[in-house]
Image (cartoon, rainbow, N blue to C red; front, side):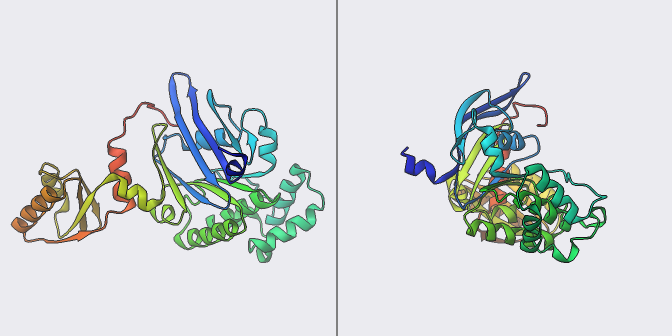
Length: 315
């Protein structure tokens, strides 16, 4: 790869591995995130997402593998990486007995920022926090705490944001506002690597990677990931879906059934056999059947069901 091509990537890591004792928590992970790109990092709890993120930004040293973050070597230049990365952890880690402004001022002091008061006021304005700047953090809702955490990440004007499940426990309106803010930042050239469990958030990312048991199982554009699995999907509407699902799982051509409210998604690779089985069983029960597009959630459930647990512990 040429220097010019390398400069296009905020994260460019290859064959990262990390063990904790006898557990292989990150297994040969390679990933590239372009500058100004929102990259979604998906996977179940214990899949290695958090450990991978920490390896990529120099907070942890890999057992093997190499790469760069913002052009800096992840092995030898972790201090430089940390100065230009904003890292938002799963757990809210600011002080409840300080106001929003006081929290941001404290963070600015830790960074040793010159003109920190100007930086704090600008960040308050940019993140829509000015009207609540003097409110005690402990009285904030989850959505406002989330916005404060993002503001603290942005104080030192990082070139890369690493967000570890930032919207967990936040209401849908606050999640939507948060993602609009992420797209605004990406439009300014800031790269974002965000881990999430939510499929609607995954669909708002430019690219995605799915990790399970420490291994990257899929990555790329959402449409490409869906297409690569070669699944065909039918939707059955009606009642007694659990019983219907059990029956369909044993039917020829059916690889997966997933309930979505009052509907059942039935997927498989063999389009002809799948259609035959779905129509026969649905007709016998008098249920309505229609073809549907295979979605990301269908695909990720399918991928996950075929991955092997080689960790056995949460990291």
